[in-house]
Image (cartoon, helix red, strand yellow):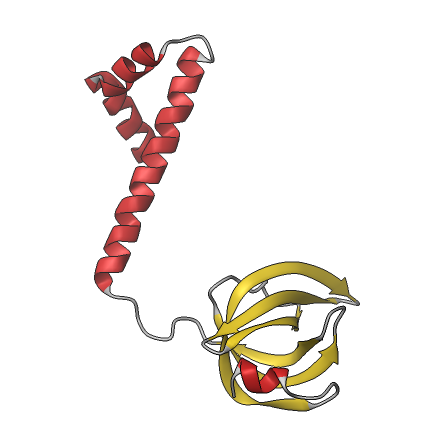
Length: 154
């Protein structure tokens, strides 16, 4: 089933059966009783649709995450209709990402950590009272690089 077919359904119609939709946007969470309702926008090649997903006490949904719709219903929204998902299953990755992607992510995360530590150390040394030239010279010095490496290693 796709979003184009779902949008044509009348209010109150129940459907499901295990088809997969991808979350384009994960919006606000609202506490209802002891559980949570997470408002999302689903996306597929035929369109987009607003939905409220009953996540109960589970972790919030994330953007780009595919989920399998097991039980849902069409409800009236402020404008048009929306989907209310009562039961779902998290799918995760549709396929395993290539190992090269993990290597890139790992090298990027090291660079991000290194950059944040460098910024923190430079801000601690100079505060707001240094020229760009001073900060750049310090960041390129061997002793500064050694301090950053030692901070990362612990």
